[in-house]
Image (tube, rainbow, N blue to C red; front, side, top):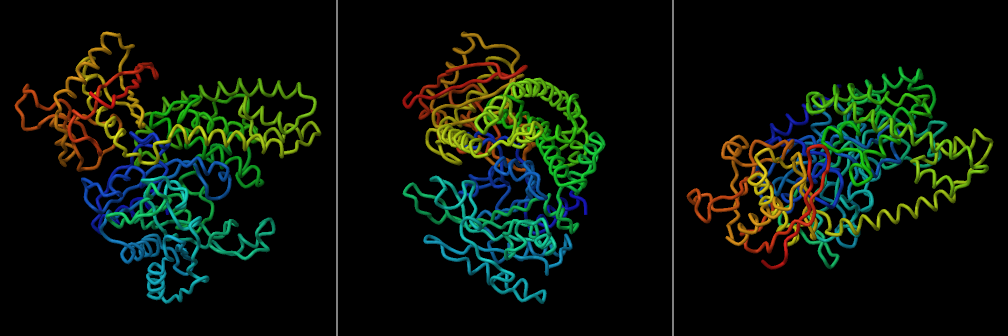
Length: 619
């Protein structure tokens, strides 16, 4: 079965059951400084899981593209990827376990044709705060019984602790920050056969196999999260005002399971990329484990890089741009182990197959393919020069040790495996201990910095953030009034301390222009304009003059926030100043925003500017 068929069948299945299809959000989350990329289908839906009304109702379905960098060290096995698509369906306070679990079982067995005898499920074992999920166990036992399968605990149904069967974006309950929603989940696994566990090279062959074993026999294909709790400031869990279902099924893994093939890299989501790598390297994917692993990493990292570039991320040494740069360089290093060195432009040849894979689901990749190709080739060329410098540096080191190996990683991006291989070719053995110690120190510093950068907490809806979110609407409109209607929002990022707003404009703003923008915004704050919203269709919203986030996909029904009174006559004191499509949240009137001040204005790239601004606590 093709991946497009799996995606289509899934959407149609839930649309028939009253769900509204919503588009995938961009990879870079809008107005959320707490994370670099959307890493789950629920992330753009946080306000609605917390109780806000969604324009499309209580039942939603989509396929969300995502990036999970925490899986980078796992890429190279048969199932982990950095870029992925997550098939998702949501109940926002509507149905719950007794509807969700039978529907998912019906989808995978009837629509995808999976043998129910090869399906195993897990549930939450309970902890001091939340009891064992006996309700899900009973539902699963009834489901399996209906197809003639006896489902006993520890045989067909397995209960695991929070580390395995609790889901929030931050992890298990004790890692959740205040305001973060989460809940117990029930995962489904597909059994590819005991030969994967008993294989002579399997390090787990002498251990008891179970669904969460890492041998590769069982593959998690989907997860139903029962999101019914929110973390409190005192560390406790409180029941949400509504019980939600948040389902995620990896398209890559569901496609592999539907073809009874444990290797996601041999599905149509990767096979065309792998074929080109085989041709360029003159090696076969199945030649030896090292070759297979290297080809998987190159295919995954370049695909992810293409999708990031298609969403406007550019290589840099900060935030999303740094992640992109790291992926490209890591792909090139593993490509080098395949004999792909020297002419680094070969990465450009991998753009076309990626674009073709997603030409229906994400046509923007095809539209931007040539631009993406040039950007990738330029980044590859830059790294090629850096790599040569690193290799010359190594030649001057008489005896490599772990500390020097880490310096090579830090300065030139050399992963441990590459340095180890260079050392081996010189008859040296490098102890990994010192490298691992230095690398851990580096990771700890990065995590500490990240905690400081993102200290607002996940899905921060604090009073300060809500004020600044509303201020971005005023800024967007003021820029268009002062600079011209060519101004379009290119992105934004908000913390409790400041807003960051990216927009299209060809030149640096003058001091006079900055002052005019500030004055215009502060006039609207002084007027104490009301802020309200209405739900309408996307088409009608645009006809009414509502601004939209450039490049964003919107569902059929949207929320339009107006700053000013929509019923006031044009030109009156309280007439509408700003009208914009947005999910919220916002203040109720502008008077509480305080005084708006632009702190910094700078170039972001060709034709794109960036503004940092704040609002004072008092007008």
